[in-house]
Image 1 (cartoon, rainbow, N blue to C red):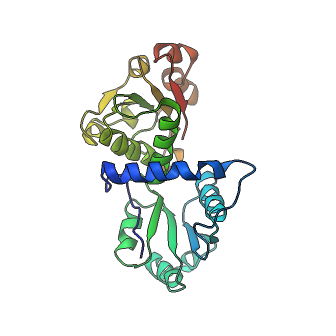
Image 2 (spheres, rainbow, N blue to C red; image 1 turned 90 degrees about the horizontal axis):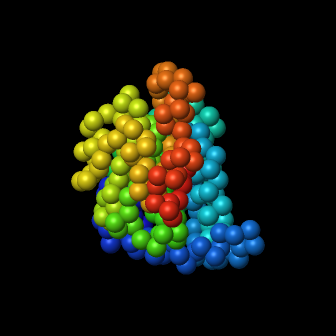
Length: 261
């Protein structure tokens, strides 16, 4: 039985390096004229998305097909959860059909970890509440390596709604394991002081110009309106202080890359 992928915080540097190195072999199969491989032939991947998703769900489905696996996708609205069945019972029913892996997204932080304790089927966390999004961080790391050739010693500025961002958390966990410097930037209402304790060396900055100065990577995050009752400020005001403009890019490293996961 394979191993679950529940979070970056659970992995050590060597484990992450093996995943990132392995990904290189599959990159040629990601283009428009891809050659399907048989790495996962005979496997069944269940995509259980209890929270809305377009890019992540589609990416998992396409990747599974290109690797030769069959897929089954369910949503909260199309599952027995909508009729009152518990999440554990629903996933137990799916696990009884012997899938090779269950890819799961859920609005509750910790849901994949909870289910991993109740199921023998490996679970891949495709995002749980505001907790983690490990596969996004792995993708971001692979992209940075492809463009800049390293992670160690880089200055990475993550801008936006940090408090509600599982992407920010997973990236902080990963980048800190590889010796990158991470600066988190956003309005005080979306960047509480305790975020500095996510990992060693994390810097908090509320002025975007200072945050992006000499940055090798600028990662822009959206405000997660679905997780907050009302916006922290009007859209125009937010963009004035935390929207990326040419002046910010010019303050960064000459070879800076801008990412928007």
